[in-house]
Image (cartoon, rainbow, N blue to C red):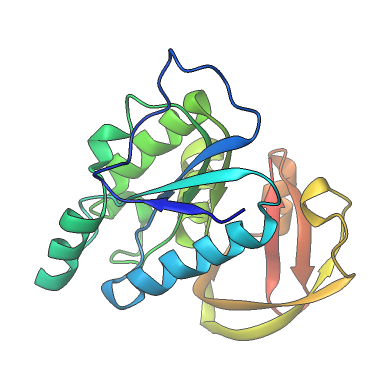
Length: 215
């Protein structure tokens, strides 16, 4: 069944009075990617969700943190194509996906969107079943929730790296033992810090470090 990518005219919270539909899930994408990657990121997640939806009716709505720096075009596009983040606070969803963005400050807590992002973390804990934090958003989430600080790298870690599956989990069920994964970042999350705070590393690379982890 195809994914329904819903724009603000049809984006709505899951109404409290609606009877549950076991074949429908409501997912939000908070797309904070830079302007040049906004549309490509939408297409990628629509394609990924569509490839795994099976018989589910997946309804995907779009949001963005308003403090993420953008060009005039980017601001107009987000205003016209995405729902306001304020509409998210009164909704409940089955799933949430939050992307990263280009860092503006050495300390994540100095980023212009830090307050909105931490509010999103708190909201997600109470109002979704599961959340995917991608790239910089993952670094921010574990800093806020668990006090895990990212560690600067000497050089940018950029390329496609072979990552090994190091733990069994439903997210990796059926996946090959080794998968190529792209990375582009200046920082990393140490595996020991993650495991000490209850995170479980699922995939990692000897060269790139931690790839995917859950809690």
